[in-house]
Image 1: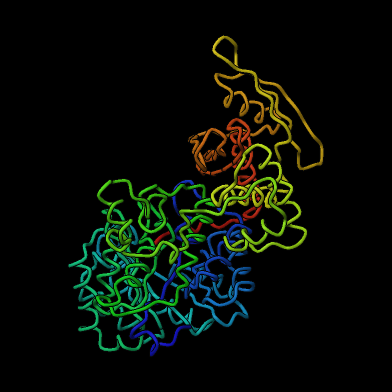
Image 2: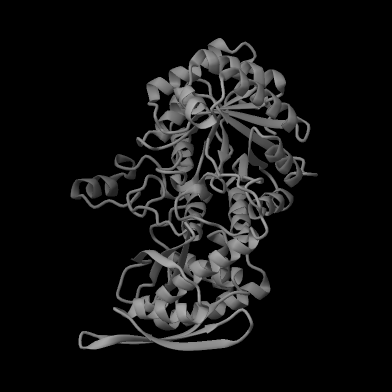
Length: 526
């Protein structure tokens, strides 16, 4: 738990990528993927990791438990509704962990109370206080959120915050749950809380802003200007609907303008780029080219006037040094002549720590890629590592062995696919389709015998040039749930096969993680 006295000139960075970020439509992570992200977030230096919603499913419970046990440094937090069973599950998942936090929440606005909760204000107040007390019996560090705070009657909000702090809450979080507020209004709300909650100095004031109107980052910073000392958000701005405040933007705003915000963070900003790329690859959500801080074009100049000024003095058109956020415009290039030591050193710089047996497998894949691509840069290496992790994570499920396609403008597309199956057998089949990718997917369907609907297909070039790696993202739907898969290869049809199989493997693995669950707990947002 961050000491209250330490927060006067420091902003606590609370990362909820593994909880609210996973609520992004089409996202779905395995336990191993969540653990990998959590370790990278620890390297980034975030103060709090909200590892999941322990009561929502056995998979989420296991992810929270393992992250709490294995990831060192940050406080590990899990969300819970103001319901006894949720709080008990949270306490059990965090059992024996020193830096542990339970984050409990309940609706506070009249619109939520009337249409969602169907309870009066007094009943909700009682539930909030009892939830904090119950959470306090498990951990010392308790966070409370009045959901939809930005649309809540301020007088009722002040009374609720005073009551939960008195009950033991160490952090009170003010969510703009539906992204309704604006910086002036939200800043005034935070200021009003400091002026009207008598015991507010006994807790850290936090904010959790959604981006429905594109103001999550601005609202978060307005809160900091008015005394908030914890900001919650996600890397790359992931999250429910239009997402949350993008943590990399909030962090670099504070770091770039200490003269204005007069606060600091404990973040190792050079890990921002690595963290962004890892999360993009694992989630299967590409980062837009012009995304602030982490987009491909964030530090590229095309205008003649800009280029002229930049070449004379880079501060004319750059307010940050690219390497301060781990951005590498001029990547070190590797070739098929590069050795194992050089590859390992470069991967370590990119945030991948590999054991001897792991580097052997990666080096073999690197050599195969180098035979098809003359030069390999950082973007290729990130794609290569993502592909290797996908294979490792799904070693007990289906793997693409071979893909052979015949197509053209005068022939019916035909695909022959061989899969390595979970039982150790290799199975092949041949199918026709409306195009080569359709034929490949139909062939895979006929081997796996699973009824899924392909809802999204996209292809991106990882690097430039005719020999670029093709990065394919596929999303499938089954029983109302969406699962994403990615695959990379110099042949986009092979990449498509890998992505489709990866999506099916995710479906199988996440289903297996949650098998036997009778929980109907929704993965709600604050």
